Image (cartoon, rainbow, N blue to C red):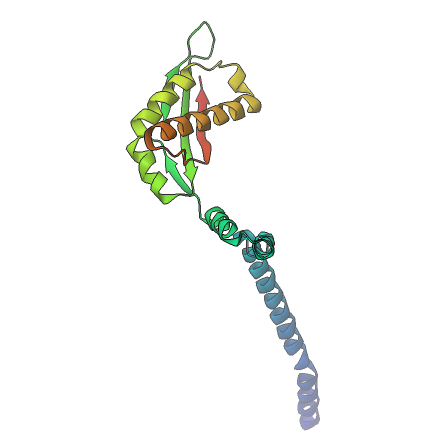
Length: 183
């Protein structure tokens, strides 16, 4: 009788063996799906699946001016370099307002590596122009997002004006406020 129980136990063990295999198969499928989703997200974030490059390639093949468009496509594909204008700008507001100080930290963006060195070289002239620009602002207008965006656009124009007068090339494409404090 004891031998029959052993045989029954072996049969039950044989029936349970496929369950771990099916669990393993499910785990493998889930891992493969997660890897696929991860790879797709990575490609989308790096721009390889955005479709813009294919459109640029089609346009350059269809036109006779492919050299100009290839140069433009290469220029727009270059990574942007950010140059901090440290230390932060601190200016006093004139007038009888409750807001008396503005502290702004900003970075400028360019895709041209030669402009990075030019920005560093002409930093004193850029800072001088920006101090005057920031000090001339209405502090109440800067309380809104629209006011900050307008100041950002003015800042970009001022930096481009200084770079154009110093180097002959505006070179700077964007300005980002990384800190904006009013007291």
